[in-house]
Amino acid sequence: MKNCFDQYTKEYDNWYETNKDIYNLELEAITKIMPAKTNSLEIGVGTGRFASRLEIGYGIEPSFEMGLIAKSRDVNVIQAKGENLPFRDKEFDLILLVTVICFVKDIPGFLLELKRVLKENGDIILAFIDKNTPLGKKYEEKKANHIFYKYATFYNTREILNFLDSAGFKAVDFAQTIFENQVKNVKDGYGEGAFVVVKAQKIK
Image 1: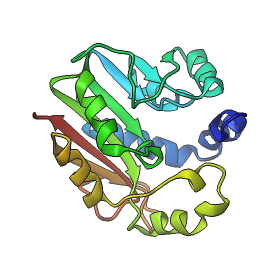
Image 2: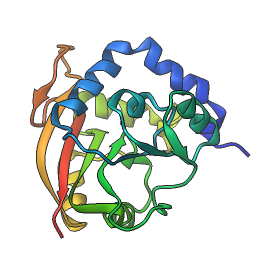
Image 3: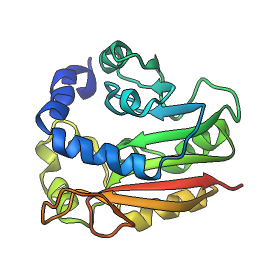
Image 4: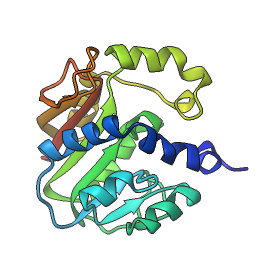
């Protein structure tokens, strides 16, 4: 039986066409704090919307159908899960995750696996919807009837930072966008924008 990401691949990918302003803001927020790295990986690469624009070298995607679209966008996709990565220790400089952490069941174990394949002083760029923001609260209220988010668990920024700290990462930079007043810009920090991006460095 197909999972929701295989079953509704076109609906997922079309969201980026009908919400280009939001998509571009999310890209801008990630780019704002993303370091220049030569060997990079996106976990949950989806249809390649972010990896293809951000020049991420490799993508991990459990959904076969989504992976096909990502490959058509010239992303090197491997069908696998982030909890069991088919890579050697200390292989990557940078790992990107965009609205993926909310679907992870065992976040501590997941982050330790990411740390395993990350080089010393390598970076994670982790983007997510903060559940304490107006949009996050709306997603939480309506997720029971949402194709994808009914399977999600949303977190606030402090919870994400605690997960990272426990796994041996230090948060070093933040960006945020998608504000309640619909101002279309990207700001430093967190606490206002629904879409939060944190850069965290592997420290131990």
